[in-house]
View 1 (cartoon, protein in one colour):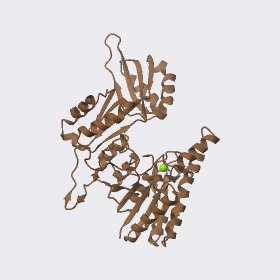
View 2: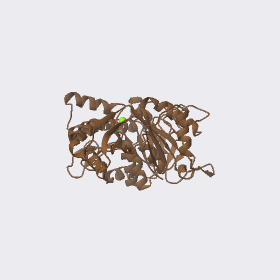
View 3: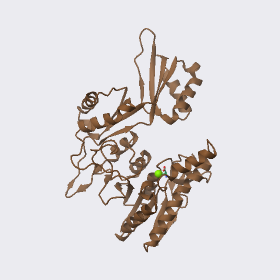
View 4: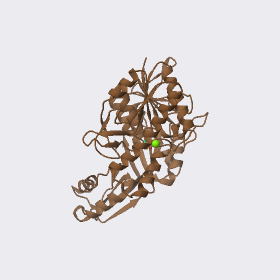
Length: 425
Ligand code: ASP
Ligand code: MG
């Protein structure tokens, strides 16, 4: 007998029918002889609706109260799911994040899990129940206040519980059939991946792939938890995300040279124009940015023009932090020393990811060739050992992703990728 942690996203439990369908799947896992813990997200767009409601009452709602409000979404779905399972003749108990022992730091709206003490969950499943846990929430160790883990945080709850319970597998049920070689909403010919390493998945998640959240994959890698990403709408096998390749039939699935293409249009670019080319300038700029608690992504510094001794430094950051960054830099203009700032939120990022890049020197050239054939202009470039990313105009992103996907032979020749519902979040 194994212990399985399953997670169902908001689109899987969007209405009463969805809840009943999910209840059946959970019961099946139990009938197959497993102990089952199911982590659930809020129904459909509930979280967005609650945020809208809060903003109608107060444009800048207090973090503590917003968390208290948002956790209500998952309370609704967990209780309904437990009811639906009981209706099918099985025992189920629902638990809030706090009851399930999800302990976090005290940063409201994006708390980090620091410990999981799942005693009540363990007891509940040992007594023969199916345990249903509210995703995306915990309780602060210091303040004892209720916290949330950031949008999409239920995946992280599931992996963290799987690690703490020593589960055999963490199954993440979503509205697509698994992890694809590109977002199936953009690339109709995207192919489902059978197995992907945690490293490549981490890089895809960091590059904008939305199927799994970066923090969740980080957690899975730290505790070596295999994740099975699959659809709650179909019975198909999904994608295994794990450190070791899986067996299929009697042979191992091979590591692909290229795992996939990710894109991200949530970032903006700031250019600091006319920076003196002398030691300490970059430090002053990025100290200002980090003091404002803004995370940046790419950085590019130009060669300075010999005649002026001035250079430009560009960096990318989440659009949502754009205003804050500009204000912080303007405030310190005198001490940093620069001419002006430029802000551009019409950019997009395309990333090619695959561990095979390390040993295949032609990949970079092929990537740039594909973009140039598609007539896409490149504005910034950054690389890691297993990733190449470029910034382009936001409008060019869909075409660029498709061109790169085709150039690397990733297009599937059969079925089109199916998107069953939801928003891809
Ligand atoms: N309900 C939360 C959200 O929409 C958490 C989640 O779905 O994982 O962000
Ligand atoms: Mg959701």
